[in-house]
Length: 428
Image (tube, rainbow, N blue to C red; front, side, top):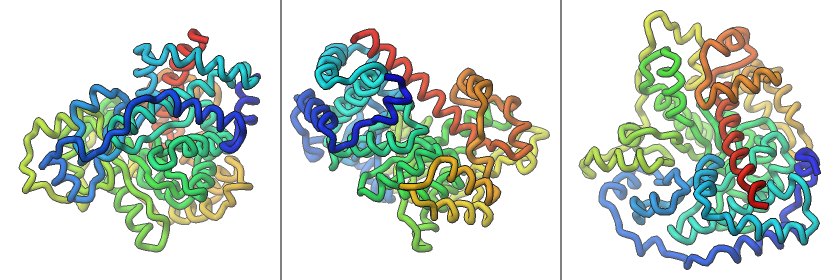
């Protein structure tokens, strides 16, 4: 079976196969369910929580999380990269062939076997985290279905069916992902809409997809500026995150969907200190340790979401001419574009409809259309795009910096998913 057919024939959550796989996943996790009250409390993290910030750890490493876990932490996030790191340790090498045997009995063949096993690995590891830490856990869809709205919807429902009270489904920012997320949200599935890099992206996400949470990958924004020598790499990601926080709160006050803002791709403890009061921190263990090492006074911890930090640019760099405002500006024109897209029927609309609506309303740069050559270049450049590669397209209005960073992030996750899939193939 080809990957395309595997996607189009993705089993629904109430199919016999999905139910058997769900039961199998639950059987694999023998860890007893812990209670958060059994973990120690932290005066400092309690003070942070009182600012309104929910504390999540961004790791799939059980041992690393256990070193830091306190009862004030409420969730963990995983993704293709983090799951791949755990799988590559060999801890699931016996699970893979066992799953393959089950799938063979269920007449699943070809590439669909690999995708199903990857789903099982994600679900089983997520369940282990749920039980070990009494936490909510974000689990991520396979990158092969990022542009398939129907398959994304079905696999999202399947994750939810396995652990409806604790699993949060991560959906990536693509036109198809927006439509799938809306359907999942309408069905009551909690969503962590991922790969966002700007306030305006999250305005669209909030209005169209209506997830529970949205993201700004702040560390990668800062790295984009520093790696390309456009500035010192400080505050750009924080500025975008705070602008997005204000944007989703403003939308909620206007009667729109109530979407919470995640500060993602945190790099250090200083970012934790600078963004106190944000709806959610999803902190890599290094950033959480960095904040603890700063030894802040809990009595002085206070909301800082009203800030708008300055961004320094390199000599000769004109931020307006370079269109860097895409990260933190939401103008009236884009608000109209997002509102128009939000009127699409998620059950009938296609990715092309989303693209067409945005283009019609002057926001066609948000999802750059990449040729095969462009896609290869994005993947080769890695998580941080090369400024010179894309400047002309940004200037022409056929691409945007936030859109290119999203494309780069998806390409990077795809590479890690491929590495995981390759290990699966080697074990079946």
